[in-house]
Image (tube, rainbow, N blue to C red):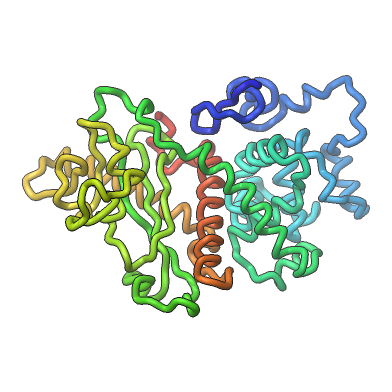
Length: 375
C-alpha cells in the first residue's frame, strides 16, 4: 500500500499517490485539465459534456446530477453544475466570471478548485460519494437552511435529507485527524515562536436536559461551546483543533494547560496543547494566556515596536481563521441539531470539524492573508 500526502504536505496512510504526483496526473494548474488528457483516446460513456454540448443538455433537462462522474469533473464543471443545482441555469450563467465565482462561494463556501480536491478524496475513500449530495452538504454548512428549505432546493424529502447530511458530514469530518496535525518536525530549529493559539465560541440552543451555567457564553450572553485552535506562524495550514468544551466551564488558559493552578501536574491532561509545544519553543497568545512566559508570549508594555507589530500581525491572522470558520452559518448561527446534551455536543463537534476540513482544503487556493502566498 502506498502513501499519499495530505493537503498540508504531510504523509498519511490513505491509498493513492502523493499530492504532487496527483497534481501531475489531474490537477494541472489547479484546474483539473490533466484529468481530461488522461482519458483521451478512451471510450468515455460517462464523460461530462463540454461547452455548447453541455449547455444543450442542460437546456433539454436530461441531467441526473447524482450520476455525474466525480473523477473526470474539472473545477469548471463543478462551478457550472453546482450553480445549476441552486437555480442558476445555463442562461443565468452568461455573466462575468467574478460574479459566477461569488455566487458559488455564497452558496457553498469553498472555491470550486477546493471542492474538486475534496470530491476526489471523498470518492477515493468512499466509492459511493455523489456530487449532488456532497454539494447539498456544503450548501447546508454554508447557509444552514432548515430541511424544509433544502427539500425545495434539492428535490429530496425531509426524511432523506436529515440522515444524508449527517452521513456526508461525518465522512468529511473523518479527514480532520489527517489534515490538522501538530507535527513538531514542521518547525525550523531556529524558530522560537512557532504558533498562535486562541479559542472561539459557537452558540447553541439551550441544553434543556442538563441545564447548567457551565454552558454560559459571556460573548453571546447565551448557551455555547468552546474550541481551541492553533496556527503555525510561518506555515499556511492550521495544526490544532480541540473541543468542544462547555463555554463557561473552562478558561482559555485552563484548556491550554490541561488544568488550572490547583490541578496537580500529574493530573493535568497530557493531550493538551501545553504538552505538545517542544522545549524552547513558544506560542503567541492574547492576554488570556498571561503568566506563562516560558510557553506563551503576550503583549506587554515595554515591547519594541517590532515585537508588538509581530504579535499583532500573528494574532490578526488567528482571528482571520476564526472568521473563515464562522463564515459558514452552521457555526455562526445558533446550532439547533441534537436531542440530548451529549448528542448536541457530538453533532456540533461533527459540524465544526467538517467545516475545519473544508477550510483546510480551501486555504490552498484562498489563504488567510496575502503573506501566506509566500510560505
